Image (spheres, one colour):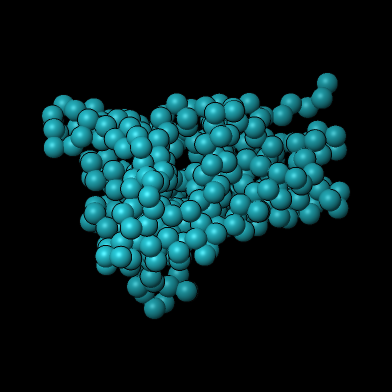
Length: 304
């Protein structure tokens, strides 16, 4: 086996030993490759100036910032994930006060995620994201440029199909959806559940546990607690706002950037590289709009 093939084979073995699918994994790109650059960071809020990506990929400073902003998004989500556990326990214990606390904590976390995500505009160049980072992070499943997949010589005898790194491979928003009881359309669910195969097994198991937990929506509707219903709706509204913000960001970094790329006649890129697709292979705008619409539909109304 040649050196390059041996490295690929070993990489696939290492990833597989952690229960993950080989490819441009969200968990690999955004959970581990950063270091704290300021010794006093533990006493200060995390911020990009105190963090440094410890990997080097195409895209230069924009990719470094893309990674670090995503790290900060995951950090902002941590209190929200804790709130889900607290919320499930509150439902089991029939504690309206604890549930209200959990819902308030979840709403604040979603709002913090939006604020962290907004830093993308300050540090990541849309042109570099579209022409370099997006293509680098893209996989070869649902990729028109590689319809048969990618053949790993010396590793497999048939082409393999793997999705690129996608935010849908983070368990955060899927966990929020499961807890809030937000149900997406069949096509979106198919993609989201496929992305779970790219998550660490414990993250995927957590989503399944949330799905089988007692229904928050049913509890809020039957408890008669108006404060919990209002807090639930505020979480749904915050999540809708986050998804609207994400759509606007995609419009800038993919849709508008694609128009500019076509106008410049960037013929050194393949025709498929100019398509309006996300790194996970979706027709990104239609997917995100569908997800946002189903989120808005989750708003609860008090029984008459």
